[in-house]
Structure formats: C-alpha cells, structure tokens
Amino acid sequence: MITKQEMKKLRKGDLVYLPSEVILFKFGKDAMVANRMITTSKPITTALVSQVDNLCEVLYNGEIWSVETNNIFLGGNND
Image: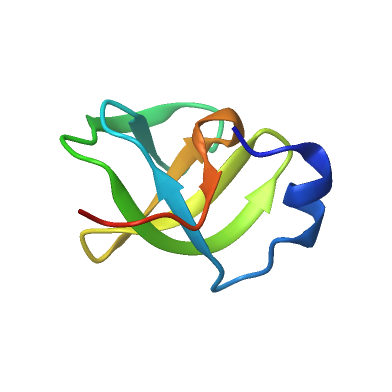
C-alpha cells in the first residue's frame, strides 16, 4: 500500500500498480454516487490522472476510473 508521504509525491502521469481484484468506480453527475463499478481481473500498471482525499483517478481500458488510495502501489510490473 502507498504511504501518505508517497501520495504527496505522486503527480499526474506517474505509473501506479493495481493488484487483481481491485474495485474501480465510475461516478456520474452526482459525484457522491458511483453509477458503475468493475473489478480488475489481473494486476495492472497504469497512469495516475489525479488524486483527491482517499480516491485517485487512473486510466483503465481507455477510460478514467476512480480507485481507493489504499489499493494503489508505486510502479510495478504488468505481467
């Protein structure tokens, strides 16, 4: 899991690692309610888009998805 100090150093475009079985959220116009959710089927390395509080936005399958910060790791290998 990524530490608070590491999160502060992350910038847009940095690579992050998501393990398998992580839930990604897609929020609608009401940003408080997720209208779509998917679970990663395998570990992936992807680009960080932004971060706010306990959520980060990442690029997944050509779309921007939100993920809880405690599910993100620095870098990693995409096997």
